[in-house]
Image 1 (cartoon, rainbow, N blue to C red):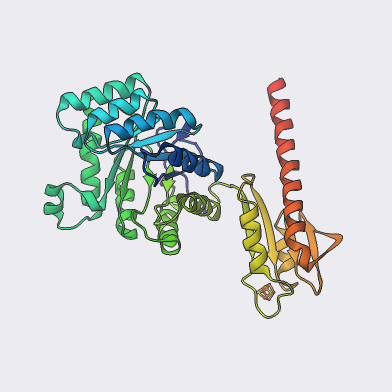
Image 2: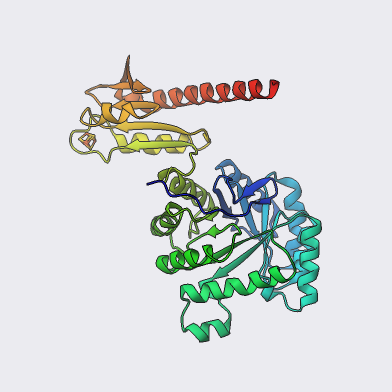
Length: 370
Ligand code: SF4
């Protein structure tokens, strides 16, 4: 079933388009102390290496805003600054090159302060992200609804949207995150009908690596399948690099965006002819730097090996002592000794990636020479 993506206005966070027909972007957030410039820069670079399109950095104080200046000078990826309440911090990080301000206009205070932030954002082409979270709803909305229902989240979001509407500012995106999967789904569905700005998806405070990824995959998966969502963050109580990986894995599974290697691997059973699980783990670790999309099937025996290899760029079908190797579904004469599968596949994958990247470069050359 091919559901059409919701039509949203395209905005730019730095040079990354969000919304419209832009690829669904994956973002994460640093969890270092922003005052520790070196640690924060290192983490941003790790996130970039993992393929993150955007990185958010928390700016809790004016000192953090000063640290942000130095951080921004040392990295090469759009940065979203996370600010609560203090409009002066927003003005400062805008001056220092923030690519997006995550700030809720209704929490800034007087209209003069809101106008000061919007004026700066407008002058510098900086979009805003309105971020509503089930854990921090306004007191009166909490009292009205009793709990953070989808309607409560959307009412809170629309308060901030209305403020931006009044000052004629349209370059924003919105999130309505809940730690409850179904509340988040319903909130995003409601919001999607009310505004045409891009939506930032997230299941907030989703939990640790495993449960958080599963909740996020269910919540965002349902929404993305319905065509809702333009950028996402998987919020995990884990290394932020894992958030990027999980985000891309969700998009890969939904066939919304290909990124890096898609390993197709069997769970193994007593028929397995080599240690599939160890091979997959080792290759995932070794090949985290590969961002070119590639389907690689790693299957323990001939029951499913040749069949999966048929639909893969590269494939291994386990056999006694030496396994069958496939390129684009075609069995090769080479048999791979089972103890060499990891090294052999790493080499084969890197070679294939190079061929694909060279072909892409040539394609670009041909296109631009006209
Ligand atoms: Fe077992 Fe073979 Fe199926 Fe893998 S493909 S789970 S080894 S029967």
